[in-house]
Length: 413
Image (cartoon, rainbow, N blue to C red):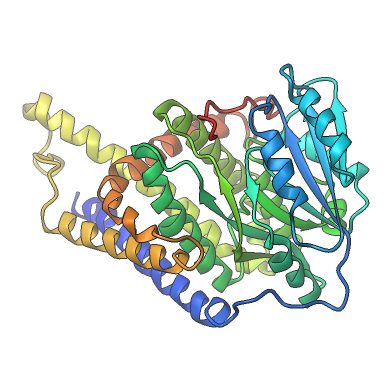
């Protein structure tokens, strides 16, 4: 029992320190002194793919933002994936006023991966910029991302830095800190060790040749972004993180929608870990080992938390049947809880400092860090506990094609 409690305490503590050190090193090595996008001798054509399904409320704003991108040569391809609302009508009106826009209409809802495939087949660009239908890409994002591809012919993808647009409500405010102190920090740290667990599907740029070699996105995965990230890196393509390439996104504002999102993420992670387990035996993919190992340690930690909670309730309900060595009389944090809380606040402070260069008044969200462990760790832990057995039961794959259902997010005026 002592080993279990030590593991539950030291794992998040170690990872928090690791992420902070890695993110700070990334900032000083790659981020701090670069204030303007590199100037290229020539700018290749970029095809911006926008897959959408029932996005009549947000698609016009997204396309209008894309039309203002400050990149010399690009086209916009919107893929209407079998929408049954007014998305097609909205896109038709936009096409009349935006010459760069082309619209592809799919008869039925085939899922994001298939929609992206259709857009890729119709694209003319050497690079494919994939943007979610409710994301607002900043005007200079492509100017920051495309130079990475010119630096090396083995760069297969460059992922950007999503920022939270809807800041109303407790869940949304907690996710502001999450994107800075966890998602941004983890990607900076993973970039330091050379491999990234996943690109941010909300806005990511791919080299079309790399996708073509791999057969593009898989429609049989819960999260096409995690799957393509692993396939690229296992096949020796480099994936990079560019924190200055921003987009503004709408995050879930209800527990129901947040749970659906986290469960899908957990399924995608489990799928990738099981699907590509055999590749981990190869020395040639050794740079993926730290990412792979950390994933499974995090899974073990989630089940360790479950065991601890079960033992606590058994100790409370039937104390006479629980051996003293396994009894847990209280879940109230003692000195270990104080250490983890202080580390969590420090992690938040470091993450908010790094991303405060791109978003004003970000530090005002530090207060919401006190709610973060209960919401993030609790929900993510439960999602992992539920998702892993589901994926194992289905042989490492989703039970069906990943067709999407638009989330219930409050539209912004």
